[in-house]
Length: 336
Image 1 (cartoon, one colour):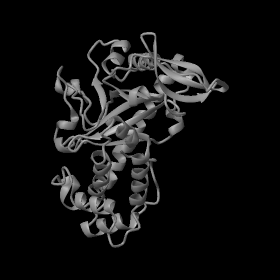
Image 2 (cartoon, rainbow, N blue to C red; image 1 turned 135 degrees about the horizontal axis):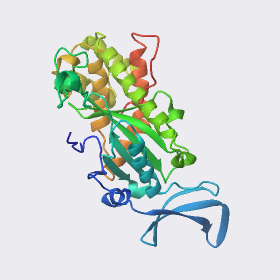
Image 3 (cartoon, rainbow, N blue to C red; image 1 turned 90 degrees about the vertical axis):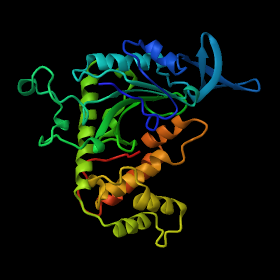
């Protein structure tokens, strides 16, 4: 299946990975084929041995400083990270390949992503449908069927930071195709942290992938719950105001959310987004996905959706909504 790089989802400096591309070629496509070189920190002739600067080196030329860290921290090189993801896909039995690579803030963050099995995967049943198989999601009457306008695409993303003291992590980024609202989700963050030793430990691959698949299932469960829980528009407006402690609806964020929720929701005409909590949640994620995109580097907005302030805002919002109709959370969700 042809994959189209959705600029509304993968914002900023991101490129589709060509078939057969090497890790080096992937990095070159986003100007990220550099090395991270630790240098002793110094200022005005003074040495600070307990600190080191991570410098970007391109073709042997030292360029910008990416970050400052303690002298015991060792960088995971861009080529090492990309090769790991390539090997990860090769070792997987899920028939996945690197599909997207992106570089944020001049190399301070780097990610590689692949499209996972999910709503759009080829759910082949060759015994029943012949050699061409059949995608159950497209067959009305199938338990897997979903209307074309309301399908979800799941991505597994490996994200590494060279500018901040953040661990390398794998995320599941789920994209609502109708509106390009991205949602990054986790059920157990620790299992998706990639330690340095894992880069040479092939046994980690299946555990990471299995956890990612569970995350996509948790997303689908959440989506189903929200679609099947009724909610009147007037009550939805009250929930927006209650969440933001703004009973009169005077804050700009509340006004924007109410406008999207009532009139401006992309895909708001779909039956799946009528009179339920799913409509309200999509208003929130549309706001965080498409509003206030960084003009300097749109990739920063993507990272915020995955693990920054936008993700935290959405996590709190979905938790608040779930508290209205359930006392048991099946997954901790970080929405983007």
